[in-house]
Image (cartoon, rainbow, N blue to C red; front, side):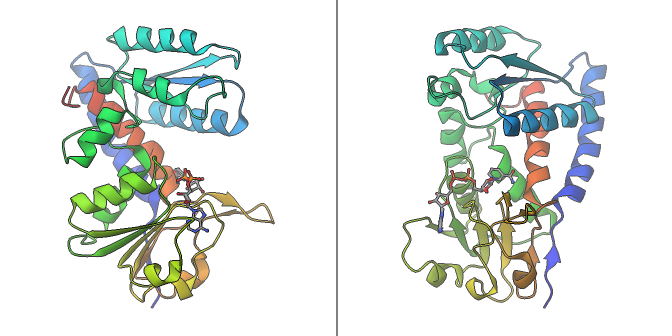
Length: 284
Ligand code: NAD
């Protein structure tokens, strides 16, 4: 068996084309969807993520701005800026690029963003709404994974979904979304004993650990759906996921590649959340 590839780049292109039309429709009604990204400090990875987000917004005709702040900014000053953005009707989505310098408590900043503008879906209210199955902003990576599964009509109900990784931004929310769709969900993590005993039972395996190529064909069940969230550089400097793509693709039914897998979907879902905010559909 050679797995069918779920190409996140192609799916993103398709979704962005329809979002471009939606943006034009909103603009005709006098609403210009607008995303404000706040970047603190000079972390090269953060800078590259932010420019990717800005480029994608422009691609679909959305307005966006990046507010760059020095690392020395205090938490009080950053909170004051968030308040100004919350109060500005022309700003629909606010994203503060993480990580923040250690003197600023990330959770204070996340909680300061008004839930109606929380396009990253990190606010506790968004998370609570997601867990209770209400309409809300879903954080972008898990949201993108769900769209990838939907795009291939992969059935979730009654399936055993195994999630490796329990971060607040990927592992925990994707498990919850799969549970909302009636999967039976098992979470594994760095303290799990005998990981293989769980992964070989998975109908749907989500891998989000940041450990390069830790999952190979021996870890999976024949015909499984394998979603690789990892973005890592291997020893040769090549971009690889948390899954050994070459071996796993011979045994799985569906697999996401790295690159061109989950990564492009994350930015695309940020745009989708910003459009939702502009349309005032966040249920606030
Ligand atoms: P994290 O470091 O916050 O969490 C990693 C999780 O993996 C932890 O819960 C840990 O318990 C678990 N883990 C670590 N080693 C393990 C092992 N040997 N066995 C089992 N579990 C183990 O990471 P994160 O933010 O969730 O990101 C995970 C990966 O996904 C990283 O490679 C990151 O770069 C990538 N990522 C990609 C996207 C995207 O858009 N594609 C978005 C976010 C994160």
